[in-house]
Amino acid sequence: MDLRDGFALEDPAVVIPWTITVAELRSLFGSHLREVTRGYFTVSCTSLGGLQHELGFHFMPRDGDRLNELEFFRRAYPNQAESFEEFQRHFEAAFGRPDWTEQRSGAFPAYAWNVPGAQIVHYVIDRFGPEEHLHIERRAQ
Image (cartoon, rainbow, N blue to C red):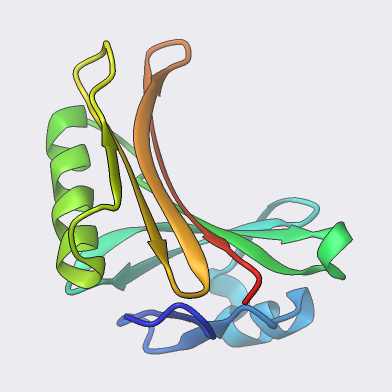
């Protein structure tokens, strides 16, 4: 998947361009879009070959209120290891093997991909218990 222009979802079947505004995002998802805080929205969706997840949209004022980052997560994590492995499997199928891997002291390694238009990171931190992080951040071209 080419991330230079944006990110494609399977359900709903839409492409989210990096140039999208908050108003356009609201129009695209309607009542399915949840506003968490100013500049941060979430939606339930499917992408990357059938991966069901929540998707967070981060808009940054310094970028003219344009989309800057996508955050992948689940509403619940009954099995942290299964979640981590499923996300990793789908991301590797879409973007190939990570460019960087680090084995950390915890149970989960950290991964990063540098792809045209974006950087992807996937790791778990211990913050009041394990917390999975998976982000796609737009990079200047």
